[in-house]
Image 1 (cartoon, rainbow, N blue to C red):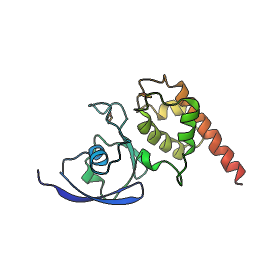
Image 2 (tube, rainbow, N blue to C red):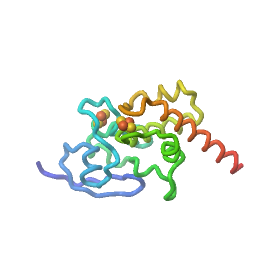
Image 3 (tube, rainbow, N blue to C red):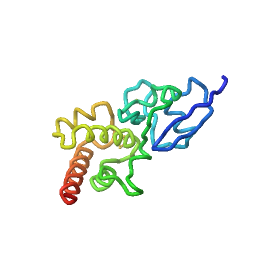
Length: 163
Ligand code: FES
Ligand code: FES
């Protein structure tokens, strides 16, 4: 199939790539931009491992055409760290064992990031509801919820200290 030149903006940088019009965003990120954090964990849009943010909204990159994302700001797990340091949620995942095999983690990170941007102090029920689009097959979820609560505490302490 004939390739077309498109421009994708990912993690604050613009990239011009030649791809087939039918190429999925997940495949363009992984194959053309070498951003392999986002994962394919299913073939029926049910696992959330491929979640990225498109203009701030969590989206399944396995269901979107890359070409349809031109002009939008895409954020992947590679863009979550802040000024070269781990973001609070990344650090808390490490501290609390929020990942085991880690396959689901990039997708969860993107969904958590959006949840906390909309609701900086969610209840446990709101966290559970907000993450219901992502599946983890290893952790049993409780360490993940602990990590998210620890990240919320760290963010709030950081905000209090900067006042
Ligand atoms: S790979 Fe499972 S929802 Fe996208
Ligand atoms: S840590 Fe293995 S699938 Fe979630």
